[in-house]
Amino acid sequence: ELARVRGLYDHMAGQVIERAKREPAPDSLIGYRRSHVVYTHSGWVLEVPGSFAEVRTEDELWVGGAGRTITLAATATGTPAGPMSAQAFLDQVAGDLGSTALTHRAGPLLGRARLMTDSSSGVEIGVVEGFMAVRGSGAVVRITFDDPEDWHWALDTWRSLVPA
Image (tube, rainbow, N blue to C red):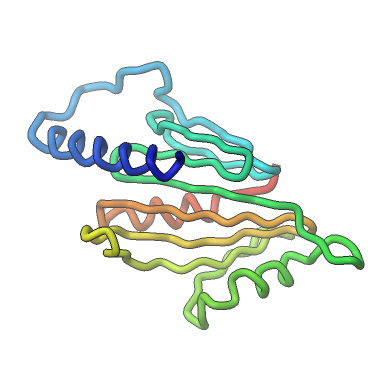
């Protein structure tokens, strides 16, 4: 069901983007969520533009709008000996990102990500595949963007993911 909703959303978003390119920009935003919205999902906090739509399941949070999407999944991490360290989680799930992976550290928070393009749908988009972890909890985030200039936004969004 989520894949169907995403497909429908992507189709509709493409139409809206094409129409928006032909129309002059409004002087001010309309709608009830002009400011950023803060979501908490499985112990992690993510701040996104208020214009984003959302789809939630127990396992993941999907938000997106105007050529940008974010999918977040998170889980408690542990071993029989106790909570898993942030580094152990990243070694286990983000080890295949390679030696050119981007890293992030903010106190006990560790992150690893890669910035790439994906043209599997026939249209090339930018993608950040990222991971964040603290002792006992890990998050996986996939951020997509249509505009090549949005890569800064995508990396800043990945770096802004923090535990609740």
